[in-house]
Image (cartoon, rainbow, N blue to C red; front, side):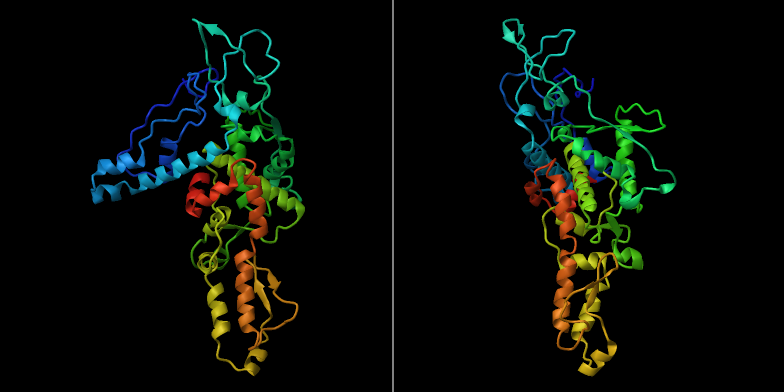
Length: 399
């Protein structure tokens, strides 16, 4: 029986390591070894939730006995385990005390009890401890249903202004009705009903809504994501990735970015991946890392060479003025941004200042959007702990 069933205290069994000779992907390891965070023991110890008996990294390395060939063959497994253990630490840090303390057996009757606290029931001279489903622990009333939201699919791709009529936009508008406890549910955070469709959401409708939200974010129905400059120019790396839109600065956009952060946090907490193909610099900033010039070249390979051409050009002052280069820089979305109110054109005297201001702008043009996304993530996961991860590790946990 599924160990998520209500009123059962089944602990997950240890899972053997997969054969290193078989092909596999990193996310398969994460799913295969994923900790069932909310399984509880029947002991009256008050200890935190039991965890699966996964092999430690130290035991694995000792078993290899210095065999470099085996270590290289298992490198992907070791990396995946490191990420999973770090993810356990992040999710464990945000568990409220009600989710960790053992819960006593309720006295069963035809009517639901008035509160979530269960009453003791003597059994063979001892108190019977029953592991309660996490949804019951988080809700003040264990018999209360999850929030149900009606969703209407847009026909003909009409998502309305700023994507407010898309599934993403409608869910974002409903977020004010979600309490902090509902965002900590282990599996389905909301129930979905598509208007005109007979969907009884036992998980399928929720998964479909998440998939549709990810598709809307990446097909232009919402203004939050843009393609990389390399994608537009069809050159360089990251030609199939997306960036946060620096032009999305309106209050409605900020609330949407916060909801995007909530989705990322839910993916980390539940282990349910999102189909989002964000560029590497986005993950670095979400993990609290600063961007570098190399990150700019990752998504816009012609930007830095163009600046170096201006800085190192041996043209005379008259030739520079004849070129009439504006004192602007193209943003990641392709808009020209005025860098200074003092200068209108690049000259031989101010070209060094232009290069400095241009690089500084591109390194920080996403700061406002990243801050909004991290604010949304903070509703679900402890954002300060994300600094323990690299951008790649954060991407692995989310996607």
